[in-house]
Image (cartoon, rainbow, N blue to C red; front, top):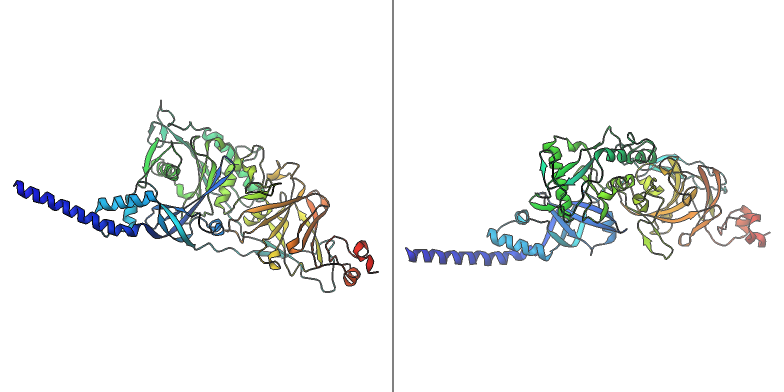
Length: 554
C-alpha cells in the first residue's frame, strides 16, 4: 500500500512537470497579442494644469485592457473616440505577462484561450501597443443654410467671385440627459447605499463636500435662476438648442459605498486612485442605484460621478466622444469641484466630442488650456469665469452657423469685408476661412466676436468686445481636435498668415454686438491694372489713389 502511494505521488509530480513544461512552451504565445474590441478614451484634467489621456479596449467578453500607446501617432490618438471598433497589436507589460503565465500554469490547460486567462486576472491587464487601427466615426458634412449676403464694403470686380456660404453642423444633442451622483466612501453602509450611524470616511478620503441640494443648485437653473449653472450655460450658449434641466436629468441622493470591493473580478478601493479604482467605484454605484434603489439609470446618457476628496489628482475626467450607443458615458469630478458649474460643462463637452482650447504664450510655448475665451480652457476651473465655447467649438456642437470663405469666394487680390456678429448673442456669428483650399495642410481659420452677455456675462473686459482669431483641425462634429487661439484684435489691428497670403484687419464696430473685419488674400505688388481697378493686391488695406504704392501708376 505504501509502495502504491509512492508511485502515485511520483506520477503526479511527473504529470505536473509535463503540464508545466507544455504550459511554458504554450505561454510564449501570450507574450504578445492582437486584440479586437471597442475603445474607451478618458481625458484627465489634472489639478497641476496638465492633462492625461487613458486609452483602453473592451473585448467582446467585456474585459477591460489598458493600452500604453505612446509610440503611436499623436494625430491618431487625438482622433480616437469612445466606442469605436479598434484592433491593436503589441506585447504585454511584465506584470501582465507574468500573471498570465501563473494563471495558465495553475489552470494546467494547454489550450486555454486568451479570453479565459484574462478573466482570471484580478487587475486590468496592460498591453504595450505597437500598432492600432480604428474605424473612426463618420463626420457630418456641413449643412448649407444660405448664401451669405455681399459684404458692405466688398470690392466688386468685373467678374466677381461667388458669395460665401452660410454653413452649420448638425446639433450635437438637444438634451444632455445626465445623472449626477454624489458619492461617499464610508466604513459602514446599509442597503440602498445609505450611511450607517457612527460610520466614518474611508482612510484617505473626506466625507462628501456638498449635499444633493447644493449640487442641484450647481446643476439646475431651476434652483438657481440668478447665477450661472450647468443648465443655464448649455441653454444660453446654445441659444436654447441644447438643454440640461430637471425634465431629462437627475441629481441622486448621495450614494455611500464601503471602502473597497470587487467589480468584474477586479478589486477597487478609495485609498488609491487607479483606473481599477474609479471605474470599480462607478460600477458599484451603478449597481446600488439599479439593484437597490430601483433607478432606471439607462435613461441617462451621461453619468457624472462626484468623487470624495482624496488621492485623485484630477479636477475632472471625461470620456472623449461618447453617445451612449456602446458604453455608458462617464465623467468623474473631484471633491473640491462639485460646486463649479464650468467643470461639469467642460467634462460633459468631452463626451460631446470636444477637445481643449489652447493658445501659445509669450515665450512661444503651447498651452492646451491657454484660451480663456472658452470653457474648454483654463476658465473651466476658475471662479467667476463662466463663459461659453469659442467659435470653433460652438460650430462643432452645432450651436453656431458661420460664413465660409474658400479659394473660390476669396481669390487672390480680393478683399472681403463682413460683419462678425457676437457669438454670445447670435447663432449666425463668425467666419471660417478654408485656407487649406489653396495652401496644402493649412487648418481652417475662424474669426469670432464675443460680448459680455448671456452665457458670457462674466467674460472679462480683456476678452469682451474683441475679435478673436482661431485655428482648428477638426473635420466635423465627431472629430475631437483642439482649437488654438491665434490672436485678439482691437480696432485697426491686423493678423496675418504669410504662408497663405492672408491678412485680417478689424476695421470698425457696426453696433455693440457686431464687429467688422476686412479679409484680404494677397496677390503681390500693386501694378497699373490693380491700381486702376481699385484692387488691394498687396493687402495693406489701401487701394487705388489711397494706396501710396499706386503713386507710380497715375
